[in-house]
Length: 249
Image 1 (tube, one colour):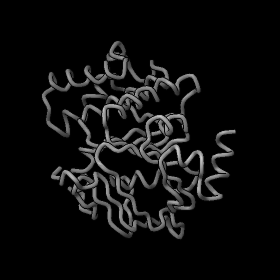
Image 2 (tube, rainbow, N blue to C red):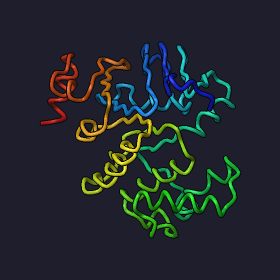
Image 3 (cartoon, rainbow, N blue to C red):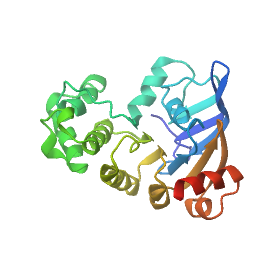
Image 4 (cartoon, rainbow, N blue to C red):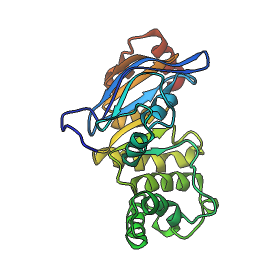
């Protein structure tokens, strides 16, 4: 992606998104700098997941501008494909192919999208499986792994495309409590290495630990944004105060 070194990695200006008469995103403006880690939180239905799905055009916005890595998402599918090559996404459900081994899940996109030779794709996949600490699972199938292991595979799979940005859509919400930490630990490592990240999550410990900025959404709008320390200690809006009191107590 051609980018100005000082330009935001992600820029949203006055973005609107409707589902019929439902206004899912209402005048969203957001800039994410290279290497910045942003956590988005808020009640269910506030537009968090819709926002990050618009960043890589999994959802199409109907008003405003979205520019990712210098490319404007304007309905041209070639531009959307170019953005997706550089933006990794990890979903709430792991979205692994059950009939492919873990290694095959990780090599599929590099071989098909980047036309990478199988040997090179295998080497890269093993590198990232080691990074998420499950290289011994390479020849198993997703159904043979725990939920936490499957989510770490999903992270490794995204990393195999060498993304500039990682998007996480509530990556721990489908996991049993004992599996949450292993996934969060992997994400913390990524954050510390300087990966640009937007993470939709209710894991406030993670937000405190790695976020440069916390964004609180409600009813399709950004209600407030602040440094984590400021947000947790002194939320500015009554809605954020109520949300935090319900989440933390």
